[in-house]
Length: 234
Image 1 (spheres, one colour):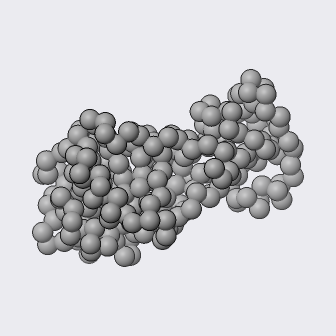
Image 2 (spheres, one colour; image 1 turned 60 degrees about the vertical axis):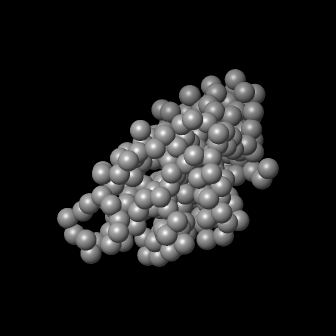
Protein backbone atom coordinates (compact mmCIF):
# COMPACT_ATOMS: atom_id res chain seq x y z
CA UNK A 1 0.00 0.00 0.00
CA UNK A 2 1.36 3.42 -0.96
CA UNK A 3 2.18 5.85 1.81
CA UNK A 4 0.24 9.08 2.03
CA UNK A 5 1.58 12.33 3.37
CA UNK A 6 -0.36 13.84 6.25
CA UNK A 7 0.16 17.42 7.44
CA UNK A 8 -1.43 19.66 10.03
CA UNK A 9 -2.04 19.52 13.73
CA UNK A 10 -5.37 17.69 13.80
CA UNK A 11 -4.64 15.34 10.91
CA UNK A 12 -1.28 14.11 12.23
CA UNK A 13 -2.62 13.84 15.76
CA UNK A 14 -5.48 11.66 14.57
CA UNK A 15 -3.03 9.44 12.66
CA UNK A 16 -0.98 8.98 15.84
CA UNK A 17 -4.12 8.08 17.78
CA UNK A 18 -5.73 5.76 15.24
CA UNK A 19 -2.80 3.91 13.62
CA UNK A 20 0.54 4.72 15.29
CA UNK A 21 2.01 1.46 13.95
CA UNK A 22 1.58 2.83 10.41
CA UNK A 23 3.10 6.27 11.04
CA UNK A 24 6.65 7.02 9.90
CA UNK A 25 8.84 10.02 9.04
CA UNK A 26 7.23 12.18 11.73
CA UNK A 27 8.64 15.67 11.21
CA UNK A 28 8.22 18.83 13.26
CA UNK A 29 9.33 22.40 12.76
CA UNK A 30 12.11 24.13 14.62
CA UNK A 31 9.65 25.98 16.91
CA UNK A 32 7.36 22.98 17.40
CA UNK A 33 8.05 22.43 21.11
CA UNK A 34 7.06 26.01 21.88
CA UNK A 35 3.49 25.31 20.77
CA UNK A 36 1.00 24.50 23.53
CA UNK A 37 -0.32 21.46 21.68
CA UNK A 38 3.10 19.84 21.08
CA UNK A 39 3.09 17.85 24.35
CA UNK A 40 0.28 15.54 23.24
CA UNK A 41 2.08 14.84 19.95
CA UNK A 42 5.35 14.03 21.64
CA UNK A 43 3.65 11.85 24.26
CA UNK A 44 1.88 9.79 21.58
CA UNK A 45 5.06 9.52 19.50
CA UNK A 46 7.11 8.30 22.47
CA UNK A 47 4.45 5.77 23.39
CA UNK A 48 4.57 4.36 19.85
CA UNK A 49 8.37 4.61 19.76
CA UNK A 50 8.26 6.97 16.79
CA UNK A 51 11.24 9.30 16.52
CA UNK A 52 10.62 12.88 15.48
CA UNK A 53 12.80 14.71 12.98
CA UNK A 54 13.28 18.47 13.06
CA UNK A 55 12.89 20.13 9.67
CA UNK A 56 13.19 23.70 8.41
CA UNK A 57 10.22 25.68 7.14
CA UNK A 58 11.06 25.09 3.47
CA UNK A 59 10.57 21.33 3.98
CA UNK A 60 6.97 21.85 5.09
CA UNK A 61 6.28 24.45 2.41
CA UNK A 62 7.03 21.81 -0.23
CA UNK A 63 4.33 19.60 1.27
CA UNK A 64 1.66 22.20 1.93
CA UNK A 65 1.34 25.91 2.61
CA UNK A 66 -0.77 25.15 5.69
CA UNK A 67 1.19 22.34 7.36
CA UNK A 68 1.37 24.01 10.80
CA UNK A 69 4.93 22.72 11.03
CA UNK A 70 4.08 19.06 11.52
CA UNK A 71 3.93 16.18 9.01
CA UNK A 72 4.18 12.41 8.76
CA UNK A 73 3.66 9.50 6.39
CA UNK A 74 0.94 6.92 6.94
CA UNK A 75 1.03 3.47 5.32
CA UNK A 76 -2.44 2.23 6.27
CA UNK A 77 -5.99 3.30 5.42
CA UNK A 78 -9.29 2.69 7.20
CA UNK A 79 -10.80 -0.69 6.32
CA UNK A 80 -13.76 -0.86 3.94
CA UNK A 81 -16.96 -1.96 5.75
CA UNK A 82 -18.81 -5.24 5.25
CA UNK A 83 -21.28 -4.43 2.49
CA UNK A 84 -23.63 -7.15 3.73
CA UNK A 85 -24.18 -5.32 7.02
CA UNK A 86 -27.78 -4.41 7.84
CA UNK A 87 -27.10 -0.70 8.18
CA UNK A 88 -24.60 1.34 6.13
CA UNK A 89 -24.38 4.85 4.72
CA UNK A 90 -22.03 5.36 1.77
CA UNK A 91 -21.15 8.35 -0.39
CA UNK A 92 -20.42 8.15 -4.11
CA UNK A 93 -18.58 11.18 -5.50
CA UNK A 94 -18.71 11.64 -9.26
CA UNK A 95 -16.09 14.01 -10.64
CA UNK A 96 -15.12 15.78 -7.40
CA UNK A 97 -11.55 16.79 -8.23
CA UNK A 98 -11.00 19.85 -6.05
CA UNK A 99 -8.81 18.82 -3.06
CA UNK A 100 -10.44 21.33 -0.70
CA UNK A 101 -13.93 20.06 -1.50
CA UNK A 102 -12.81 16.46 -1.13
CA UNK A 103 -11.09 17.21 2.17
CA UNK A 104 -14.16 19.02 3.49
CA UNK A 105 -16.35 16.07 2.49
CA UNK A 106 -14.00 13.68 4.29
CA UNK A 107 -14.24 15.76 7.44
CA UNK A 108 -18.04 15.86 7.22
CA UNK A 109 -18.21 12.13 6.50
CA UNK A 110 -16.17 11.31 9.60
CA UNK A 111 -18.10 13.57 11.96
CA UNK A 112 -21.51 12.53 10.62
CA UNK A 113 -20.88 8.80 10.65
CA UNK A 114 -20.55 7.97 6.95
CA UNK A 115 -19.25 4.41 6.56
CA UNK A 116 -17.30 4.83 3.31
CA UNK A 117 -16.75 6.86 0.15
CA UNK A 118 -16.75 5.51 -3.41
CA UNK A 119 -14.68 7.32 -6.03
CA UNK A 120 -13.96 6.66 -9.70
CA UNK A 121 -10.28 5.95 -10.38
CA UNK A 122 -10.26 8.77 -12.93
CA UNK A 123 -11.59 12.31 -12.46
CA UNK A 124 -11.40 12.31 -8.69
CA UNK A 125 -9.10 14.08 -6.26
CA UNK A 126 -6.09 12.03 -5.10
CA UNK A 127 -5.32 11.72 -1.39
CA UNK A 128 -2.83 14.56 -1.16
CA UNK A 129 -1.37 16.34 1.85
CA UNK A 130 -3.82 19.18 1.22
CA UNK A 131 -6.79 16.81 1.28
CA UNK A 132 -5.61 15.29 4.57
CA UNK A 133 -5.06 18.74 6.09
CA UNK A 134 -8.54 19.97 5.16
CA UNK A 135 -10.08 16.70 6.37
CA UNK A 136 -8.64 17.43 9.85
CA UNK A 137 -8.38 13.75 10.76
CA UNK A 138 -11.23 12.43 8.62
CA UNK A 139 -8.81 10.50 6.41
CA UNK A 140 -8.02 8.24 9.38
CA UNK A 141 -11.66 7.31 9.93
CA UNK A 142 -13.49 7.11 6.60
CA UNK A 143 -12.64 4.24 4.22
CA UNK A 144 -12.25 5.10 0.56
CA UNK A 145 -12.67 2.76 -2.39
CA UNK A 146 -11.59 3.80 -5.88
CA UNK A 147 -13.33 1.84 -8.62
CA UNK A 148 -12.97 1.62 -12.39
CA UNK A 149 -16.70 1.93 -13.03
CA UNK A 150 -18.72 3.88 -10.47
CA UNK A 151 -22.08 3.03 -12.02
CA UNK A 152 -21.29 -0.68 -12.04
CA UNK A 153 -20.20 -0.56 -8.39
CA UNK A 154 -23.41 1.21 -7.37
CA UNK A 155 -25.46 -1.36 -9.32
CA UNK A 156 -23.67 -4.16 -7.45
CA UNK A 157 -24.40 -2.52 -4.11
CA UNK A 158 -28.08 -2.14 -5.00
CA UNK A 159 -28.21 -5.90 -5.42
CA UNK A 160 -27.08 -6.10 -1.79
CA UNK A 161 -30.01 -4.02 -0.58
CA UNK A 162 -28.73 -0.45 -0.98
CA UNK A 163 -30.95 2.38 -2.18
CA UNK A 164 -29.31 5.17 -4.18
CA UNK A 165 -30.15 8.86 -3.86
CA UNK A 166 -28.74 11.27 -6.46
CA UNK A 167 -28.42 14.96 -5.58
CA UNK A 168 -29.67 16.42 -8.83
CA UNK A 169 -31.33 19.48 -10.35
CA UNK A 170 -34.00 17.65 -12.30
CA UNK A 171 -37.66 18.31 -13.03
CA UNK A 172 -38.48 14.89 -11.59
CA UNK A 173 -36.38 15.34 -8.47
CA UNK A 174 -38.07 15.21 -5.09
CA UNK A 175 -37.53 17.38 -2.05
CA UNK A 176 -34.85 15.50 -0.09
CA UNK A 177 -36.92 15.87 3.09
CA UNK A 178 -39.85 13.99 1.56
CA UNK A 179 -38.24 10.75 0.37
CA UNK A 180 -38.29 7.44 2.19
CA UNK A 181 -35.05 6.66 4.03
CA UNK A 182 -33.17 3.38 3.79
CA UNK A 183 -31.03 1.52 6.31
CA UNK A 184 -28.56 0.93 3.46
CA UNK A 185 -27.97 4.17 1.59
CA UNK A 186 -25.76 5.49 -1.20
CA UNK A 187 -25.82 9.27 -1.52
CA UNK A 188 -24.47 10.34 -4.92
CA UNK A 189 -22.99 13.82 -5.43
CA UNK A 190 -21.17 15.43 -8.32
CA UNK A 191 -18.89 18.38 -8.95
CA UNK A 192 -20.45 21.88 -8.96
CA UNK A 193 -20.02 22.61 -12.65
CA UNK A 194 -20.68 19.24 -14.28
CA UNK A 195 -22.87 17.60 -11.66
CA UNK A 196 -23.58 13.87 -11.67
CA UNK A 197 -23.34 11.99 -14.94
CA UNK A 198 -26.71 11.33 -16.59
CA UNK A 199 -26.33 7.54 -16.40
CA UNK A 200 -25.92 7.68 -12.62
CA UNK A 201 -28.92 9.99 -12.20
CA UNK A 202 -31.07 7.91 -14.54
CA UNK A 203 -30.48 4.67 -12.63
CA UNK A 204 -30.75 6.09 -9.12
CA UNK A 205 -33.67 5.01 -6.95
CA UNK A 206 -34.39 8.61 -5.97
CA UNK A 207 -33.50 11.93 -7.58
CA UNK A 208 -33.45 14.49 -4.79
CA UNK A 209 -32.88 18.21 -4.46
CA UNK A 210 -32.11 20.48 -1.52
CA UNK A 211 -34.63 23.36 -1.29
CA UNK A 212 -33.05 26.81 -1.52
CA UNK A 213 -34.19 30.40 -1.88
CA UNK A 214 -32.61 30.91 -5.32
CA UNK A 215 -32.95 28.06 -7.78
CA UNK A 216 -30.38 29.63 -10.11
CA UNK A 217 -27.61 29.47 -7.50
CA UNK A 218 -25.95 26.33 -6.17
CA UNK A 219 -24.48 25.05 -2.92
CA UNK A 220 -20.85 23.99 -2.69
CA UNK A 221 -20.65 20.20 -3.09
CA UNK A 222 -19.24 19.71 0.42
CA UNK A 223 -22.19 21.65 1.87
CA UNK A 224 -24.66 19.69 -0.26
CA UNK A 225 -23.17 16.43 0.99
CA UNK A 226 -23.43 17.59 4.60
CA UNK A 227 -27.10 18.50 4.17
CA UNK A 228 -27.75 15.25 2.31
CA UNK A 229 -26.17 13.08 4.97
CA UNK A 230 -27.93 14.94 7.77
CA UNK A 231 -31.31 14.55 6.05
CA UNK A 232 -31.07 10.96 4.80
CA UNK A 233 -29.16 9.24 7.60
CA UNK A 234 -31.63 7.10 9.63
